[in-house]
Amino acid sequence: VDNIMTYSNAQFVVLGSGDWEYEQFFKEMQAKYPGRFVLCQGFVPELARKIYGGSDIFLMPSKSEPCGLSQMVALRYGSIPVVRETGGLKDSITDSGDGKGNGFTFKSYNAHDMLDACLRAKSVYESKKDWNVLVKRALSCDFSWTQAAESYIGLYKEMVDLWK
Image (cartoon, rainbow, N blue to C red; front, side):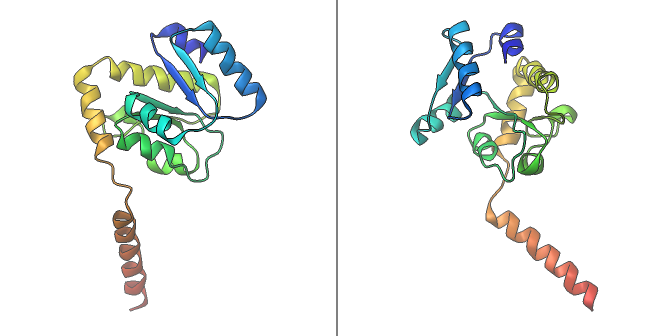
């Protein structure tokens, strides 16, 4: 986070609670970068919606994530996810390096890879045209049960055809 703040004019908003050492780190970042880094401890749904709506990029560097819904909510608000490729994050966010994805991803759970993904996001952000195309792709993502049901129906049809 310190590197991101150093190499960009980014502003951070962290919402939530967690392990003491992480909360202390975020408090230090808030003190070090007043006006650019804000820690909101706890979780208030109304505030979360405002953060999603007001953010350009949603950073979710989870060590493990069995499902993950926050990245899908971010997409609905047009906030581009930067996520670690794990669990449900890997299933729902594809890297935009090829110009076809809906976010930015990194594989290893380390600060260097996360910074690289953030800098790639920043690079696209600096091109208003490319960023707007990415945001439109993000907003068009469909994670509804209708799409899931259609996938299951297709799978069941394949299975039935195998038994014929």
